[in-house]
Every structure is written in structure tokens, then in C-alpha cells.
Length: 202
Image (tube, rainbow, N blue to C red; front, side, top):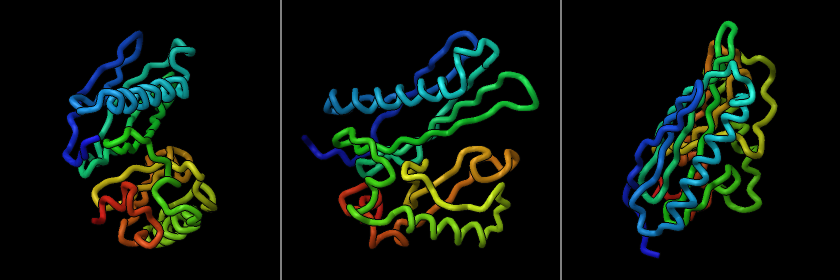
């Protein structure tokens, strides 16, 4: 395979139906069709999983709109967030955010543990930085922060790993999603040099 380091072409597609209007990203013009198919299938699978999580179309009263944001598209790394807002009545709806990070060269989808060297206690390392930020930023928690999940939500933006929590997961609804940007330089001793965070450093 030829090395792909340039930004990839991303276009918007729309998923529509009864009370449904979701815009999602599609990767185009990759030199390797199998890699392109792998990435696009992973994105669409996540979009559909979010709809099911919001009880669409099982609940006929649920109305869903969705969009996406590209967080990183450089150096062979594509990191993005999908947003889905569902309203079924009541005071307000609920928004989900899911993020996906890919190696454009292979189509590999990274989980949080994949960013770090094998056997690294990445949960403890990330927890420590989150705890420091909670104190420094005086974030009002619904309950005491204990730990991230092994598969905690994250994306990569510029030279930071951004770990985040869903609505109600850590703070009250009014505060929205709670984001914790962790500098790649603060994580440098622990990250995989051949992974997406290592790519952001060098």
C-alpha cells in the first residue's frame, strides 16, 4: 500500500425517513477501495447504533436529527464525532455523541487502549489527569468521579487526546458534554509511537 498522509476527502450524506434527518460523513477517493469501504461501513454502523440507542424507530414519537464534526484529518489519521439529537416529548430531548478514530492507511478503528503502549495502565494515567482538571476547573459533579471506562469516549484534536462524558454521565444536563483535553506531550511516555497520538507528536 502507498502511504497516505494527506487529508482525505469527506463528503456529507443524509439519512432521512419519518421524523429522521441525519447528516453523516462518507470518505471518498481513497486509493484502496477495501479500506474506504471498511471506514464508511464503520461510520454507518455507528450512526444506526445511535438511532437504536435513542429508540428510533421503535418509538413512533421519537424525532431525530444528526450531524457530524471532523476533529482531525491529517497525517493519516481521521478522527470525527457523530451527534444525534432525539426528542420524544417532555422538557427537552437528549443528545448522544459518539466518536471514531481511524488509520487511513489501513482502515483500523482505534479504541482508547490502542493509543497506548501494551501493558500501560492507561486508565490510571487518564484518571489522574481528569481528576486534576476537575479540581482546577471546579467542575460540579453529580457524584464523585471514580474512573473512566476501558472504552471511554474520546477523539483526537490537534495535539490533544480529548476524553469526554455523555450527558448526565458526570454532570447535570445544563453543562452538556464534559470534555477533558489531554496534551499528547503529557502522555508521551505512554503512547504508541506508531499510533495516532504518536503521529501527532512527530
